[in-house]
Image (tube, rainbow over all chains, first blue to last red):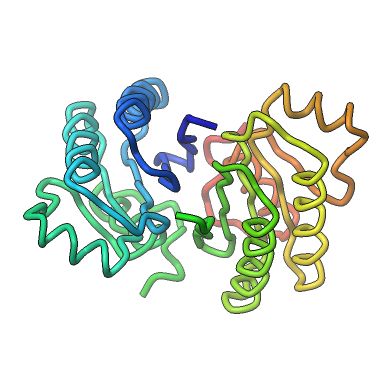
Length: 128
Length: 128
């Protein structure tokens, strides 16, 4: 189980990070994600880090890299589910996740992507 | 990171299992899931096991338990992303996942739930 699954949800891809991102796993995730975006023509990527309680500058860099890479392929990246403690640590580390969109949870992230991309897949009903 | 995140997607909940389900983690997942179904009034649960490459009778029992528990709360459970090797092992172990719906991937699982529940959230566009 040393591979992070990438789930396709309509025009978006969803990645849930539940394990510590060590070097190899992060590189594999980047490669997998980019090739999946290319293959499926996905126009948005949601990265859920609600299970991540400890964040370091490496994780921040990986998220930034993924966002930059997907942008080249014309897909937007939204990081969702950032824990309060993680938000504090990110800022204290000087990582303000520039170029990465963020949202409170997957539903809001999906609504954000839909607004950005001018899509309407009817999933935003529960989001105020 | 010893908690499996439960993501809310419209009327459904999505759980991605990426780590080995040892006893404590499985029990916590059951409890969390049931209380989330209760709290959100979700009418379907999608469990993605595409990252699971090794399955044993314990995992099979946990999936069965979750399906039975959510059914009591009037929610359907669909297990998605079963790897071919996992499907073979499940049957060889004599676990045919009775009472658990299955689908190839999250999109098809969502379409299945929508059909079962008579919902239309417009996410099944890409599913033939």
